Length: 73
Image (cartoon, rainbow, N blue to C red; front, side, top):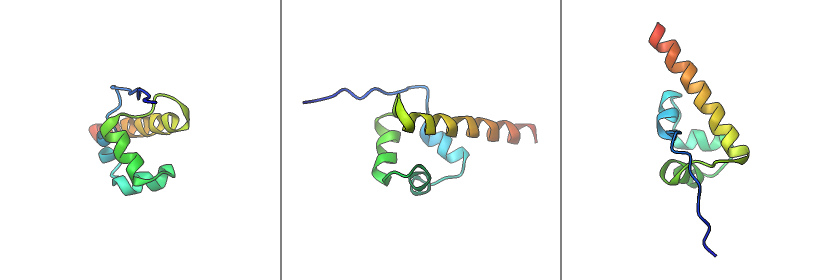
């Protein structure tokens, strides 16, 4: 059975990760997932629900705060 993977086109996880100065391995460790999961999120789309979505949403908020802090400095 093939399932369609839903993605959230508004999330640019590689950009978020770079803003937070995280490698894919560091992000995987932080999220408690395998490196292959981070690769899948970055290349096939981030989850649209559940704990992983909440985690990525939080990263996006943190990245936005960090980029605003840098811009005002």
